[in-house]
Structures are given as C-alpha cells and as structure tokens.
Length: 152
Image (cartoon, rainbow, N blue to C red; front, side, top):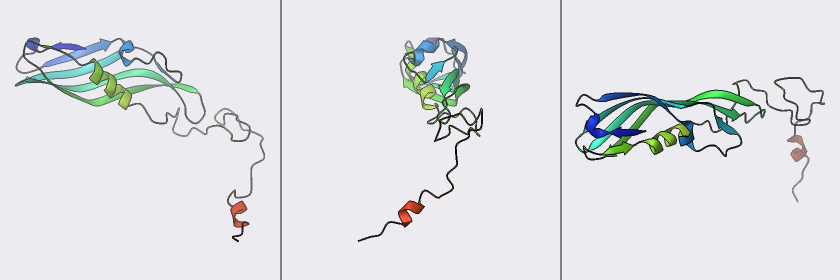
C-alpha cells in the first residue's frame, strides 16, 4: 500500500480498501492459506517530517488445528495497527512490509479450530471431535512407574 504524503490534507485522510493477499508471501506454506484479499481501514496524518498511520488490517485465513489436524477458517486482524515513517512532503511511503508484519504477528502460535477441541486419541489417532474411540483407557497414573525406582 502506497501513500503519497503530498495528497494528505492537514486534518488527515482515511484509507479504506483491499490489497492482494500475495503481499503476505504465504503461497508456499502447507498449513496456512489465505482465503481472500487483505483489507484495511487506516487513518493517515502528516506531522513535521513523518507520516503516522493508525487503524486496522485483516484477512480471512485457513490454519491447520494444532490439536486435531483439521483445517479451519478464521479472521486474522490487527485492530491496533500503527506505522510511523520518516519522509519528506513530496515522498511516497510504501507500507506493504509494515502491513505484512502486522498480520503475521497476529497469527495464533498454536491455532485451534475451537476452544473445546478434543484433539486426537494418543493411542489410535482418531479425531475425538468426530467420534469416540474404543481404546482401553490407562487407569494407572503414568508417574507411578517412577515410584518403583530405587536409588542406589
């Protein structure tokens, strides 16, 4: 997204629109995909020697759940986007990298399809969200094995 500082009036200017999702450079990711354009609602102001931009940026995305492995869709949004760039009044400022970074930093560390995702059975691997497995549940505490160890 390019902003020309000479076009911004003293009271500031609102920028509302979309950018191609290719600016995120995620085409080669296997567990993440972008499902549409990146949208922005930004307000730009010029201060002496710098451009200040605030607002929100977001995009619809798909992630692979870190618990069950299913792909799910969600909106990734930075509602507190801020960029400050030094520039002269006749310059154009490209905010593409700042927008890309803001979106990527809002990605969940461990994406989960839903808060109560049950994940996979550790014994048979079936998705516990879809069906109940018939694995025999361990009744013993796995730590009791350690209780039997003796120090020499």
